[in-house]
Image (spheres, one colour):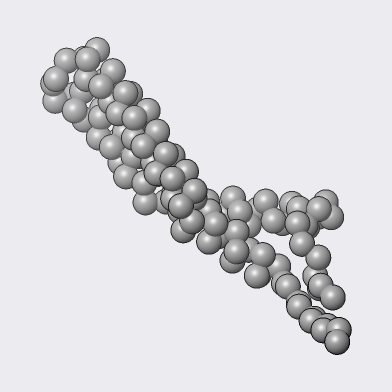
Length: 106
């Protein structure tokens, strides 16, 4: 007996799978954590350099505040940025004809 399955996969299914892999899989969570930690370290180094060169004064603390706001914004927007990057990547793959799936399997 021969079974035939017809499976239709859409672009939305492909996007949702990749979104899951990037944001919720163990490897994706690890990469997000690494990105968050690296941005924190980089901005922290800039903040420490600012404080070290100017000393701990009112002006240097005011100079560090924009860096802390930038850090908070990056931390809050990292997941939406990843989603946007994924959508752009899939769009580019579609335009070049290199989608990683076929629209139907038999």
